[in-house]
Length: 187
Image 1: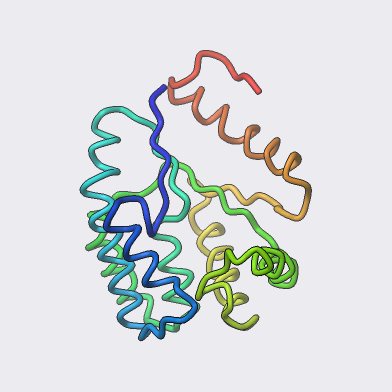
Image 2 (image 1 turned 90 degrees about the horizontal axis):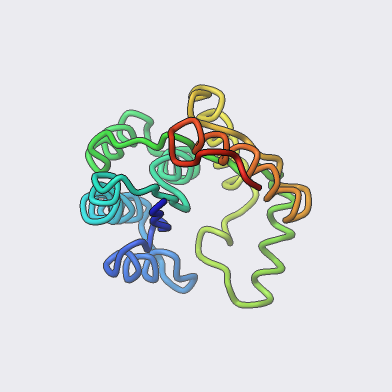
């Protein structure tokens, strides 16, 4: 099975440059500019990478997508849900994932893991937001998962990497098998 692995922002050459600017901890980015640049990256990403891959019957694995805008810019930054919905719809053209995995972790545990990454210099501007911001983001993701149960699977990410991987495989492999991408489930 052909698979395309990507991320937002940064799944294209343009996206990589936008990601560097948006997530730079030294850069001050106005919240509206942040929202619109993420949307511009997504629009480009959908049209130049995601749609061509899907039209070629490839499986697309993306680290983040439109739900991130609902959570981060909508709940985190406080933009109105109607505005967020309109911008997401414009950027995606209505393209939605068939399956979304939400790796859930408390804000406190997430902060511990972020501090570990900071020690290795791999933090970004969103990572350093305060706990209230991250609580709003987490709650927004959980609310989306609660209302879109047909595509969301919430995975408790408190456990080891191996246990989290096992949970992912227990979800993804039957999902792919049911859609005809795999003949039998293999772990």
